[in-house]
Image (cartoon, rainbow over the protein chains, first blue to last red):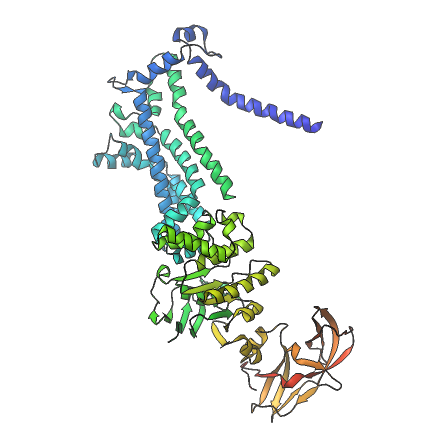
Length: 273
Length: 350
Ligand SMILES: Nc1ncnc2c1ncn2[C@@H]1O[C@H](COP(=O)(O)OP(=O)(O)O)[C@@H](O)[C@H]1O
Ligand SMILES: [Mg+2]
């Protein structure tokens, strides 16, 4: 009896929690499927309307910006390129940095690691002007390269991979060496597959990190052609339903990445057991 | 020149630990050599220098007459079985065996044939598609062996490969390793701290203590003729009994008895060693043992007790004799099988 009570009680708590998170999102979505005059007169809606296709297509294809030359579609493309670039590049560099830190007999490897670690305490905003001037000197303002590279060194990912490598027994390396594996082969044939779960987790994390960037893309792009979704969110104008539609769509890529990659993530976790 | 030659090999770790001192050793082709000694004596270090996993501080290692001090482990063509097996956790058994062959650029069909042959030899053909995590301890052990065998290396190196197995499996695998080695005929070095393992496996064994080879020889030579107190105490189970004594004019006097006409000119404080199995009961024997405890092993009884001077002593007798706790036994040493060591240096003097 009391178990039934506590179990239903905890379900109620969970339900309230979920509602608090989901209901506002749902209301934005429902409202974004009505016409703007309907929303202006009747307020936010709880049920779906019938202007879904019309509103979303219009948002995707409308040429906005000061010079009317960027569409939301292009922004999604930019954001996708940037987020993917950041995810791939930061995971690749972190994997290799951790490899060097753990497996190469670098002098002061621990000290070096802590110096890398300290950069976690220095937010991008703090180094944003020097970083910008470097990019400007290199003529990389208004380029994908400029959007991606400066934020693609991840101390956190390096930390995770380093800690993981440290748990791999030395005998594995020694065994591989005796089996004729070179330094590079050990990395590719052993460390990368063994850290698969962690790589997927880091890819998700860094994708969302890259996707959510606001200040850096704002600074390093002057051409509207390089605007990202998050910048677009800030600069949106126009009717409320179109803005809602844009907000809804802006949530899709991160959610999609998580859904696509989580399969591998969970599979990895179970295989490692 | 023999197959593998170690000449004055010394290892000093960067932190100053001297793990191996000026060790010289020759191993013949096809021989099964065992390094045995207590934990921390430098066995693994010596083995790892042969593998190329540790730098050699001083000295030379020659394989087939070629100096290999500076040769990378991947080029030495040696295979090693580790205590924890070090199987590749993300590869199935087939790929675990095949990996070393792939790295040597061998074509796919040859690899498949070699892997299948090795798997058959080790009776792991049924598990080829499984990951190591889905295998039992004994099966993992076989895979580790398979990975070594499949490459047909110049030398097998084993670093305490049986110590993670339960007692029964350990004895079984011990036999299989010996059989396998005889079948394949590859020169092998086997490291263990277990003297029974060492005795049963070795063609020759090296008893190592504090980074020095104390004695080198066939198991029987070492058992019958230990050259030092350490070797005498380390080889043989139950351990040899040690008694204090004094040697003068070829006569040894110990607490309660004397032995005359000893074949040694040494004079001074000595330690007398007698193996528990080299004693027999007689009337008016040399040694009087008051029995405290009898361990019945079935085939043998191990009789533990004390001498007059309260020294612990062990006697091994056939299992069909019944010996009661508290009785007094009178024992003689069979065929003068006793060992006398200089007490200060531990060297054998008779
Ligand atoms: N990497 C190392 N650095 C410093 N000392 C070590 C290292 N490896 C082993 N030693 C020391 O060298 C000695 C011999 O070690 P080892 O060869 O592993 O002994 P065994 O295998 O006989 O137990 C020990 O005293 C051990 O503490
Ligand atoms: Mg060891």
